[in-house]
Length: 234
Ligand code: GAR
Image 1 (tube, rainbow, N blue to C red):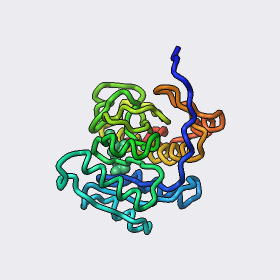
Image 2 (cartoon, rainbow, N blue to C red; image 1 turned 135 degrees about the horizontal axis):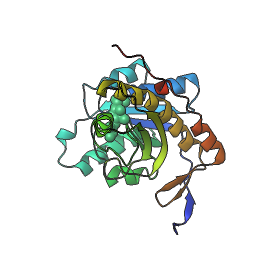
Image 3 (cartoon, helix red, strand yellow; image 1 turned 90 degrees about the vertical axis):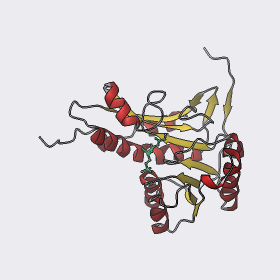
Image 4 (cartoon, rainbow, N blue to C red; image 1 turned 180 degrees about the vertical axis):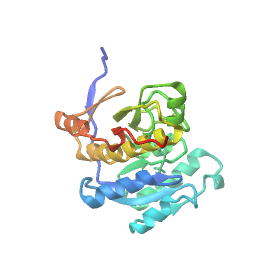
């Protein structure tokens, strides 16, 4: 039994800073959830460390401000993160969502947004951290795979878990099909996890995140397209 005390996380404002490095499909899921009204939030800024990230085009299509800054121009992680914090503050971001942002963030960013930096990872953490997690899971031979939304900390894919969702692995799955099915699941849980944080009332005890009963019910309602067995070419 843990002896750590329970504290309620402060309810943040609803302006999101989304950090990306590439394709931006999770960014799109967030923007779609906002547009359809299932997520009550606003994207204040999409920030990319890569100018060629396709997610930047998605942001522009939705009329969201963007900023690009290569980490290569900075001497160290801390100086780079200080610049990200400056940009996020200038745009009035309250919460930071890492959405395929392929960099470890330093305490400079984490301390600027305490308990307000989320990350999504395509595995049931703590299994299969790092790159190509669905491929790692398939090659390992797991029968259940999934994805995790967690609070970021200064180590890769290790912070406290906010929400997870799971799917069965089928014998016919390949790296491509499993990656795609997990991605479909990510698009469902990330907006929902962000909504849980923004709605407030989340409590934390050590590493454990405690959800209200209503939040837990809402989280359990993820009906997944990804769970349906796909038809495979013979
Ligand atoms: C997503 O699968 C996300 O979970 C993963 O990168 C992909 C980004 O796709 N992130 C990590 O592996 C973080 N360790 P997207 O750019 O289309 O959202």
